[in-house]
Picture 1: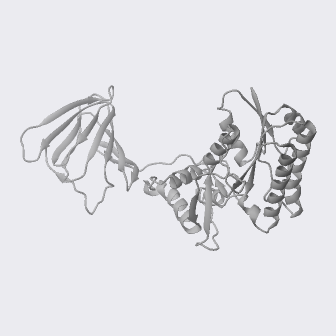
Picture 2 (picture 1 turned 60 degrees about the horizontal axis):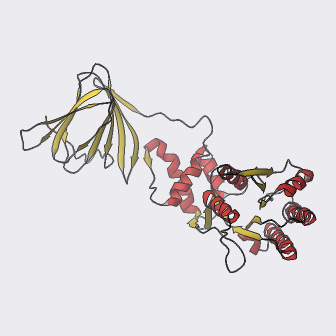
Picture 3 (picture 1 turned 120 degrees about the vertical axis):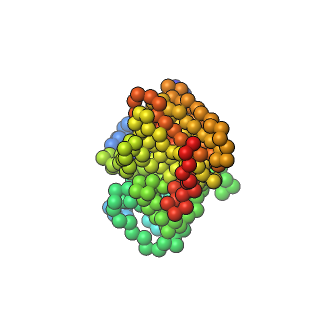
Length: 371
């Protein structure tokens, strides 16, 4: 087993890193956090073969705590390692704010210098990842991430505050950060010419776009229209947003339209892939008997038995498919064919439908015609 020390293991990046390391073979994770003691830290260092130094502070009650929580802790770590005489690699997360003249930035810069000094004195491998704003699951709102704050507030119906909507942000996703850290442990740190390591993939956005996109996620439950996830940033942002739902707010009801045939409900919609809906149909009942010029559909019976019938609108030939929830069989509904589905069983029929476009009541592209 390879013993790996993670300081700040209970923090945002630490929890995600530890979760990833648990999937690595032959890794023993030594977790150090705010509740741990210096005695425990010493014991961990004497056992460790690799160190991730993630611990730090960025929202103290007073400015003096910046130095103690960042440079001070790093110096204590380096002193213990120096006393141990061990030559083991250390990866530390820092911040792009280390280049700025503010208390937090100065404390992170001083932390970097403590690590580099220890490295140079003993020829120990040391890697510093300068990170911009990191977003993802388990981040803390109103603490270290505007993304976390916006996602938490919008997901829970709270207001957000934006001072300058044009403010530009540089973001990295937590999974990319963790991937880089694990790569560094495996000997492939992304070290640049300036002596610092960086996450390869970054996202540029504005507060305006960030807020609008997060609000669209919340609105998706009402309109059922999910955003465009072709861009990985939006997909990563949605994963972050969904992690902030309160425990009693994971579920939401769909509107069910009842009639004498059964019921039908829209499930999810997208301007890119169309929409999915579901129906329950009573025995002997037929749905459909219409055709489309351009709209394409797919039918999938998931419970019960049915007969799906087609007829090209200028032909008398009727094509029939027998389908059952016992053997899933997707049926494509081509343009220009009138079609229907009939419940031929003794129990209610449950069917999933997909259409390549969102239903438009002003332009339905639907024309009723008996098969």
